[in-house]
Image 1 (cartoon, rainbow, N blue to C red):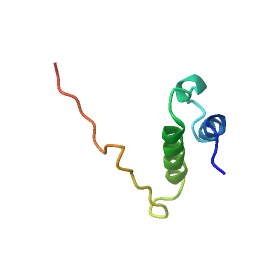
Image 2: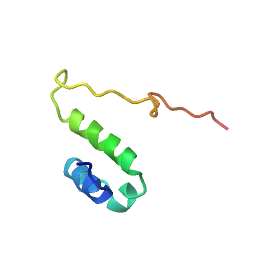
Image 3: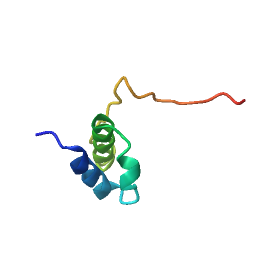
Length: 66
């Protein structure tokens, strides 16, 4: 059963207590689910878990100086 937005935020707060609920509330359920998945994989020992970035998320972001 998929988690609703409040459940996703609660689960994220278990991993990242410093994340502000109001700030997290600005994101979509899809984005929150993606972030929670990343946090869960980051908890695993290195090499035991593989987190794959989906096509919607860039690996490197940059901006040009004005």
